[in-house]
Image 1 (tube, each protein chain N blue to C red):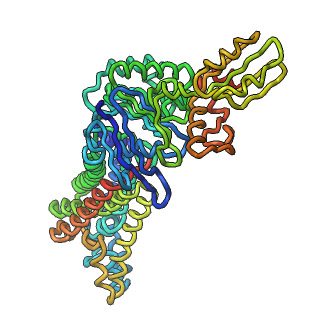
Image 2: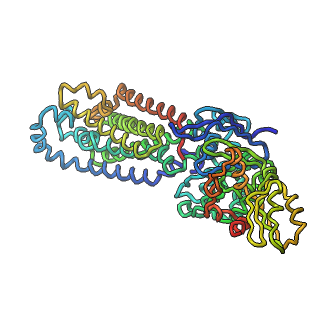
Image 3: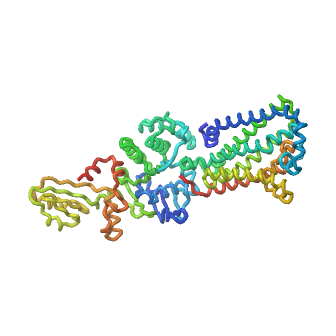
Length: 330
Length: 267
């Protein structure tokens, strides 16, 4: 399949400080690619190179088959971009701002701009100076989508959006994908990427450390399982099962993790009287931790609370998925 | 007015440009209308002027010291200091608002994600600066022409226009250097500081060089010298000097283009 974004050994240093190192990206036509990593990992740096806002120290990037540096204007004609941080012209209204941007592009269907504004419940008549953070993000999303570009690059698209608007945004992403558009989004909110992405790349300290299909990731997932038995918990039976770890027993209750399929665990449980069985689907955070710990050779000293993917309360609040909250409460 | 960065730039500064033009025009008309009463007391004033050291007199007033003459009067009151100061200040302010201003306020990154080449953006932003400066200079010329007719100053039309051309070229030379600093660094404060420093140094250099005979050669390093020093209205258009000012502008413009096309853009 044709590559929409293709980088080779992309490296950027700011003076002596690290931006990104040897990043090899391959984003295919029509996919939603999640570019994941903690803040400061190099996500924005990579995106800004693709748009020729900054220049790589070494390596090369092509976007839509065009050289990101030499043919940048042609690239930018076919790309929509939402920056992670940006300002608006304070004295222009939303409509005036979008008119200006539409004029810079040419050929924008204004009725589609109005439709997007209506969909995101964005008031086009307000001056940018009076817009809240969430409304500024909405305007950013509208200008990124308004010309129906082949590639949409979104840097932290949902930060500052309330859950309802986030849901609308996810729908917009799904529709864009159905329409054959390619989406490249960066995020540090893993459940978000899990929800919208088909493939994810993990960037850590400037390097792309893993690229995985979200579907296949889930297959070799680590499930959190909790079983409540009528009788005493049969700890020993489960401890010997392949893939089972972190086993704890409290009275009649057994909690553990399972790497891979749940089949053997379910069959073992079936030999006993089971009151309740819950299994939390793993999120990308756990998947990546598992991946990264393997890569680092064991990594027993890295508990989820201390790793690069620390789960802070703010991030959980960002996630509209109620499952996340209950998983934490248990 | 939101069709491209040039028109948007004009739209952004329409209010401030109108205020600048109105203020400068009022000031010019006011200074011109003071001339008849100055001419009446020129005799008393002349004794005072003649008592000054010659080098000093020449540095600030040029070759003619006859304050009863409108050209000498306007050179001293407007063209030797106040008018170029105002034009340069305006030029630097507008220059700083272009690339550096947009970059520091955080709008440049998104703007350059649109299909606009850096060269095109730079050219349009520069055109905003040139247009604003031309308009302000034209307002100055128009006010002076009106005052000339109203008060009967009898200014030579050719020199009046010529002096304004030199004024425009001086303001553009300084403002373009400032613009280049902004384009190369993206820093608004630095743009203003270097532009202002260049204007002040150019002015002082021209004065000091004339006060100290052994330093006269330093004059050639000053943009004010090429502009016409203390007597632009008497010298009018000076083609060779105009070329020097244009060269400075062109070199600064080239630096702006070269640096802006190559550097990283901040947020």
